[in-house]
Length: 178
Ligand SMILES: [Zn+2]
Image 1 (spheres, rainbow, N blue to C red):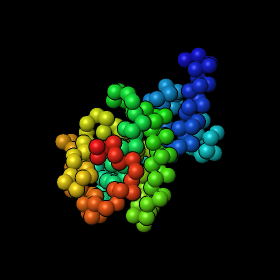
Image 2: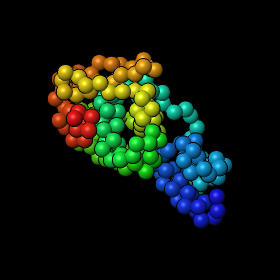
Image 3: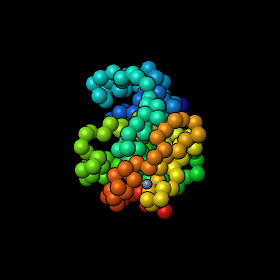
Image 4: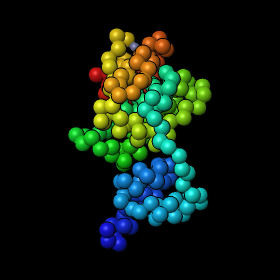
């Protein structure tokens, strides 16, 4: 990597750090050394990067509201995705995350308790979806439920649990619902 490339990757990495992406993910995409990224994290946030594991796929779908959030996020990402690659596009992930956050704040049902869905969770989710570890199955209510051949996830439709009504508040679900 020459100096210009390193500078360009550093700017990208600084943006990813601001979003809270884990160093291991940023390293994978920018090819910048971990030690360098840890220092950059201190420059950007004033703190060392936090360690800790990524969320597991079953935990992403731990309750009905979390499942609805996941379904909405995948739908928003796919709407903007015009590539056939299975690799998660980080730039797309960030813009989908902004859009997702804007939609969620408008929904009372999703804001009763603060929903903990962060950018790293979004990355785990999209990886699982792009690699067919999870799939969405049409439900008779007109929405979708989650299915997985790999993990034990709750397969009951989360929208039916809310009487099916509030998918209409989620404007971007049309990609999955057809
Ligand atoms: Zn349903």
